[in-house]
Amino acid sequence: MKKNLFLLGFVLMATSMMAQTEKSESWYFKIGGSYFNQTASTEFPTVGGNDALSKVYQGGKLISEESITGSFGQGFRTGVTAGYRFNARLGVEMGINYYSSNEKTMAQTVSDLPITPTGVYSFKSVGQITAFDLAPSLVLFLGEHKGFEPYTKVGILVPIHGDLEITSDAYAPIAFSSTGVPTAFGNVHSVDVVKPNPTIGFSAVMGTSYKIGKKLSVFAELEYRNFTVHGKTKETTEFKVNGNDALATRTKAQIHTNYVDKLTASSNNKLTNPNGLDSTKAMDELSSYVGISGLGLTLGLKYSL
Image (cartoon, rainbow, N blue to C red; front, side, top):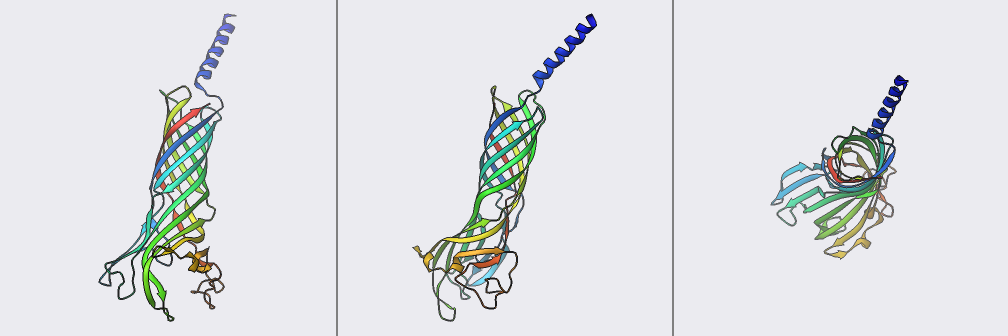
């Protein structure tokens, strides 16, 4: 009898201890802000027919030239996340984030003369990516100690809306003779918007939360993400000459671009089509990729139900 009572008491005590240490299924919500630094640099794609180069001219002569490399992985992100814990160790999360990259110079030419004898002019093209993405992930909680609860998670990134906006300013030819020789020059400002093809990226996180209340915690996460964006179309949304709107003077081929994997004789591109460019249709150009890989720090608040 005493043995049975002892066993019963041991079982009740063990059950009580498990109830205190293990967490049942529960929901939680997080809100946070991040800053990312780029982790990989690649050569930027061609911008408006200009290679990703930085050129410097003096007295009409080229004195330096270098490739422009980088990525759009540096910038700020804000987001909200819903999480669900299956037990003390395992959970899942679904986040929705808004990301805005830092502006990056993609191509430029600098000259000490407005127009050089060889017809070179000054220009600069700057790009910036903004995007919304969904971030589903699997979370592994490593155990709570003195209010701290470290965890790791891996997941994917699915961009759902966004674009690359390229702003270009130049002192360039604005009128040509019948033989194609520039006859007038002016200040040209343009904005091109590149829409991407669907893509998926990868994310890996190490983080910890710290309780500041019964249901409220603060958290910090170190995140590495890696994905590239593949251009689908490009549209000129703004074109000004000497401050005046001149978008209506552009042909459809100058305003709209379709990105393709290969240019052939049937492509609407003067380089490969024997019939030349059809200005009434969107121009075909080779597709390009830009990177958004980065390493970032996220700080925020977590509320557990």
